[in-house]
Amino acid sequence: MYALYRWLTISLGFLLSLLLFKRKISGKESQSRYIEKKSVISIKRPAGKLLWIHGASVGEAQSALILVNRIIKNFPDVNILVTTGTLTSADLMAKRLPERAFHQFYPLDNPKWVNRFIRHWKPDTVLWMESELWPNMLHEIKVNNIPSALVNARLSPKTFKMWKKVPTFTKSMFSTFTKILCQTDDDKNKFDILGASDTITTDNIKYSSEPLSYDDIKLKEFKRSIKDRRVWLYSSTHEGEEEIAHELHIKLIKEYPDLLTIIIPRHPDRRDNIKKNCAHYNLHTSYRGSEVNLPKDNDDIYIVDTLGELGLFYRLSPIAVIGRSLSNDGGGGHNPIEAAQLNCAVIHGNDIQNLQQIYDEMNMTGAAIKVDNSNELYNVLKTLLDNDNVLKKSQNKALEFANKKTHVIDIVMEELNPVLCAMRGSEEKDNYAHKYP
Figure 1: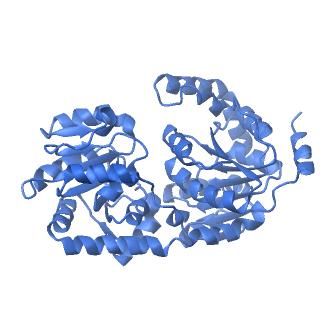
Figure 2 (figure 1 turned 30 degrees about the vertical axis):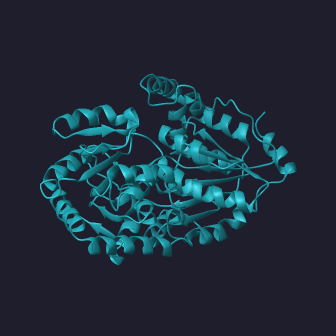
Figure 3 (figure 1 turned 180 degrees about the vertical axis):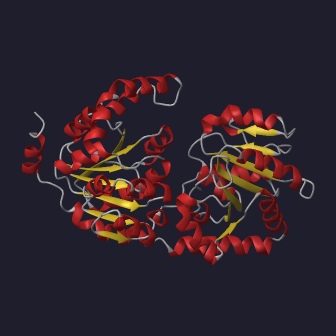
């Protein structure tokens, strides 16, 4: 099976190059750095020990940051390479990576590009986040005996079903990892069934994330701007959810004429489509990214089409509806912990399968409120906007839940310690480099 996959990815090298170029032209890839996805690398490997951490997109990148900050603190002689695949995650890394850590785009899984990547970086240890598994790269890590672990591992029902169809191939892939740290017991059971060894449940590392940063001066400016207006926030929205927010606002302003609805799309590059949709609702709307202003007194909707300001608006709004849980794309849910950490009442829809464990635990303790549809969302928003005591209780439960879970990173680091301490010395590194003439 692997031989067939390897042959296909070699044969498709030209098409992958063409795809990358087309994505660059359409603005879906970095104009200057897209060639990193073919392992055309412009920076040198730093001297000394190098840890490589890979996460696919923003969610995994946020988990990776938790690890990066702790490892930088515990291992002062280690440099950290972080790879991701999306523009949004690259922007996040540029803003939040500490000294001695740096970002590169992950190469597509073509054997030639994978080989070039490993030859250049010669990682001493590898940590992969969550669920993105690429056979050619895992093969290279394995044949070079690089200590590695899969961290915050999870398997969706769909992915589990897919890997179960090719058990020998799957077991070989998982054997790359020295250890697999799973989010839940259910995830551990799935990995065990698929033939993985040395699996353990450590809970979800996202619980240990630092609260999102925000500019206190900007927060005070916004508070002065909105005065005593009621506010609610729909964060990390996907297609279909901006329309829900607009329709809810139209219903809610009949009882709360001063209401301000804040919408933060997950992907700001959707702003043009969002603007077109807004025009149908006859509501006064401002856009932070294009106008860089504060909400005006007559604004109904304030759209934050910028990156890196989610923490500011979680601090501003006491109510946060978490996006991609009522969207048109089947959902999956985004991270509710960030809102809970900044004292928001947390609301979400049904489609939260990507973070099911977190949402289930929050719902069980009253730290989040689940709604089945936009009508239920209207009723919950109305209740919270009507009653300050009910709102405060919801905020407190969310914050208490987030505070009780901060220890997960300690468990993860304890389990990873043998892998991290197995980083090669300089003599072994020289031998490793000679594997590639």
